[in-house]
Length: 275
View 1 (cartoon, rainbow, N blue to C red):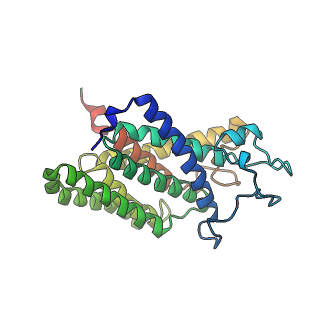
View 2: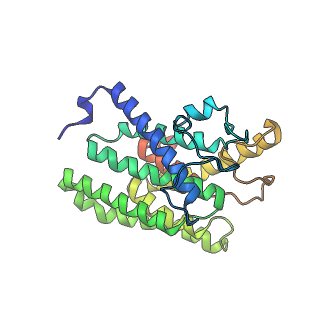
View 3: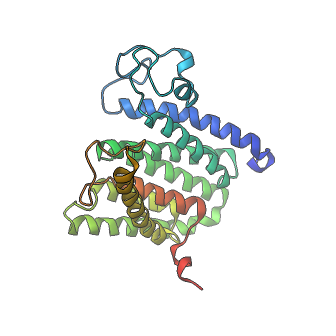
């Protein structure tokens, strides 16, 4: 089986970014039409005037920049979310090159990344994590673990501990959900924590949990400061209402950012307290 290290990294990065931008464009369509009854096979069109988009308006990011973020026909503003999702997906696909050693492993990690992008954006806009997405993520993470065991059979002995650690991580969020009566985080976040815990592994579950709260605090404060002093809304705005310290903020993006940081960087919060 060909190893990715046998291919020049520059070519790999260009392919990964290009493919990620294309997948990000598809994810935008999927997110918009998910649970709406609309077919994914319909033509892309302006959300304001319903004019079908021409082929040259479908290039990820480039078309958005060329059109200056506005519809060619009616001039209405195109949400910058679309370009952000495409760029973010492309970046994740490139970063995955630092973890995967073979093409099958890379494809699995790309699929995990795509599902996490959908969950992040959907939760930001709807404050809910569909069970179908969590189940799909769990299945793909299980496939990732199965592939690792197939590559290194000795890892099969670590699977029970990995599952136990994931249950423990999700159990902690369940505890917070119960004592707060669902005001601190939603039950969907509790369910999402299980596959994310499986992904990061037993040695980093603690870091995953702690880092999710650190990231949540940093981003929440940054949003409040941006809202007050930045004079505008971020590209992936949470809601159109004014944010306050008591506002409900979706927690899934913090969970996912934490899990990806730990998975890709092997960041261990305990290392910050060792001398």
